[in-house]
Image (cartoon, rainbow, N blue to C red; front, top):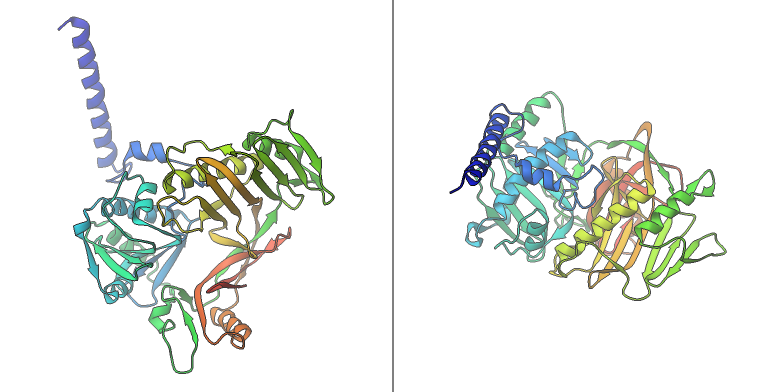
Length: 448
């Protein structure tokens, strides 16, 4: 063995020892918590507004303190949400790495017992299959085979409970962990002198037939005893600037869609919409801030598509949305709404999240996208910025909003089945202030 090779080996060993020593110091001195993987975090770190970095974030997190109605809600815009999810994600990666035999089938009573005991409840805006969820949290595969879930409960000892909405089955994966118990302890101590009266629908039997009552609420809908306060948001259209079309923004959009501004054919429609025609498709941008693209041939090649899997397609679309948002100066969180339950989903919808609350448009989503063979075939986006107005307003009382919906629909529907009821900003596409209100989904009917 020559001298140069010996020196190279020694140098490599020194580097390894230095890395091991650095990790030990950082963990022992609590410069980051135990279980923190620097290399994974560094590789997957995205900005606060990165869609591709938020595909598996819950819409909201509830910390259940073990006392019925004493629960605390955390939205995606809070620092505490980030901390709680970081701990939960470590446990979820362990759970979805477990062999199938370790996922025990349990009764619905076990599920509800976990929710009324000390636990953390993760509520997702869409349904995932086990494989798609595992892929999106960085696992290559999983033996778990849930068909579609949107709710996860992690008990204080680390056990993970999952409800399969497709089969209406319940499962428990035993994971020994102290992180969630510690979080619940901190939350209980922090709010020991404060009241938080949040029930779930099943707590109050709102999900069951009660005498002549023909209105049913999905069991996991949170019931708030007091109005929900949230900051007023101002909706802005990034296409317009001083009542004129912002040409710089238009240029950025063309670049995002791989359109050469010097060679593209263009024309303006009677309503002021700009239309750009190239070989790969037609891009239309309205003065109201609605963007639409339709492929003429194969469409636009999406980067990072290595297969026709749902994981590959949704990741590529999320990355594309990030490009469009960056080009238009949109700094808003977004979440995927469409179900990710099949192996090869190709159509996706997204909604904005402003100030931690979902933004709901009447009859449409913020983004609708369709892929074909790794290419963008169709794409529509309502381009919006949401700016803090500096004032706070409250939603109407929960029970008042519920009564209004019942009054509106009881004559036309023999039964009213409410699948979702949540605080949200309702956007009618006007450029004005948006106040927190209630978004209510009644089977296939949307009530606002």
